[in-house]
Length: 403
Image 1 (cartoon, rainbow, N blue to C red):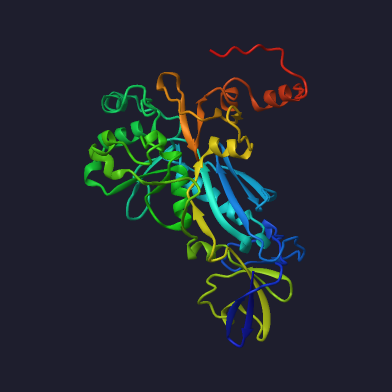
Image 2: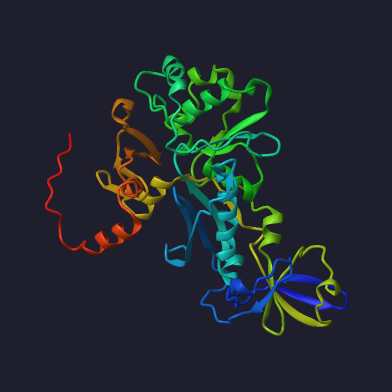
């Protein structure tokens, strides 16, 4: 939290060392289109002095959500949004949709908690691939989604990769990269490959070309030796591959433009206003009263952005399964299975691969037998009625055979 002292036409800010007091009670209906907005603030927050919070954003197949936790793992705030379906040339503009959702979720975070956020990370759908301009970060083509297959590139990938490697699947990130490289003027373009989570994180830290070894697995990165294999580095498109770090590694501080965008001021009248630029805007231009004290709330300049992971790994971590042999099934639009193991297991013939998790491995795979397939068979009304007949406390009379 920051104290804002106004003297005459100028103001200066100092860190507030006492406990933060304001919360995000600004009704969205009160927000105008201009950069200066006002509303009432509830001055009642249970937040310890200098307490640090940690923000995670989960971008799934149909929507996104955030959770803000403290060092004990207690959830202090959470929220979710469905992706707005913007259309471009008769297809969904996923880039605009994801960007809008990210900024919408950041705006949803209670104002009182923003200064306490120490770090931010994002997970995204595995193998959702973006090819962007290496200078501007703008996409050079439409995103290739997690379930999109590029079978025309599979023979090329199989010819260079070891037999039954994870990349030997039409929907792998490497197949998507090869498909783009072969069907465009790619050799003459300065580009970099990013995954969904990588690109969203770039919007917050501004350093292009950074990924994590969970997302990079399906492009061929070897997390065991922490490098790309020689058979991949020898390919002409290796120049497009991102730099890879461990999940949760600090990339850099949050961009000043993001801090400014989500910076708000509480006036002596207990009204909430946004601040266009806390570094340069004069008090007179904002109609601040002389010799008054204001509270300035926004993300701290000490807030760092960290590398992310995939959505199914984030779900595994959230389940707190930390012993080998423990497994987690994530049922959403799709179905993902992860089992914690001391051994790495991979075989593309059966859709099995292993993600590194510190000194252990998450062995598993994914299936399209999730909630999305039900919508192809049942209407929303039918699903709602059938769901009401489910008793979660009663075991299903089914025998499951694993082979």
